[in-house]
Length: 137
Image (cartoon, rainbow, N blue to C red; front, side, top):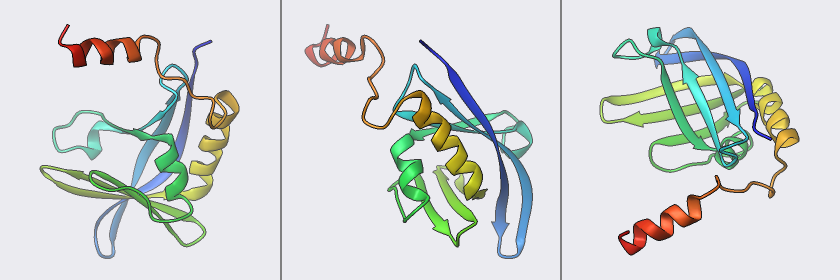
């Protein structure tokens, strides 16, 4: 059975010290892609005026609520008991988003109720596709 879980998360986009603005954020989990989560940001938050979705692992989001996690383009860490920081790196710069931790935890609970930790199965055909790609088919 295929399903999508979406949760609005209260967030703030941190532009620079003492300068933050509210940001509408949606966390999305698709049981058809059980290892990944998406953080979706509205068009008015992007440089090109289009909705932006960042895809990263559910395990990374979970780990980042309790301790610093991630390397490279997506990094998360707790900021006191109430917030989780999400740092996103692109060729154009860095975005720092402060999420309300209770929203993130509620989203994770709902995703684990749909697909328990350790029961994730990659999308059907992924292994075959990777094998074919590596063989040069």
